[in-house]
Length: 239
Image 1 (cartoon, rainbow, N blue to C red):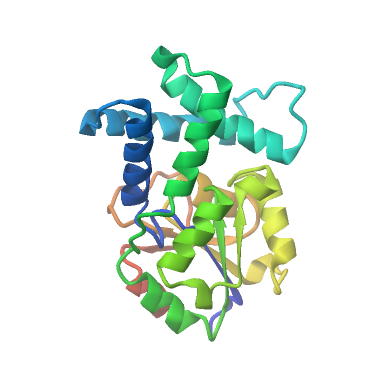
Image 2 (tube, rainbow, N blue to C red):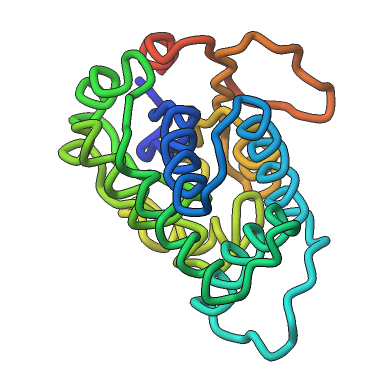
């Protein structure tokens, strides 16, 4: 019998193919800006976006002192990245906000599930409380869950946008745990593809982790996931 009562799933690149979602959203904003899409530009955007959020998650990003509410903080972080990435365009704040709104909305427009995601959650939902913890935008996350036909299996979604803190920060997990029917972290398992946000987040916050290593990359000694899977089908067998 499994020791776990609650399964916390990351969303992007764990249940949803995030590359296809962001590629579509990026194509739409490039069109609005009058810029031709290229694979190189898209690759640069992905690298920049990853670096940008790693800076925030590592505590290296300074937010202006006059920004105090969670909503304003999230708006600043999401908008500022477009100003930085498209710095040669000298985007004004109004345009950057519009671009961010379009991008965020389009993230949920082209959704493809990771192979086996809906089948897995369908099989697990009668035995476990299933929740989603994501660093992505809340509305986009809900739309992705809906379009991937996962809604019936998920109790709720917690996003960094609503919390004001991202995985692996403790504030994110404190908020998530408070919302769960089961508040015992010893009976939770966090499943995700990211070592720096999911595995490290679980390690630092008293939650067992399952690393979804779909690319079969070497595991650094600094990370110690409780379980490792290479496809989603393996999770149900291990539980």
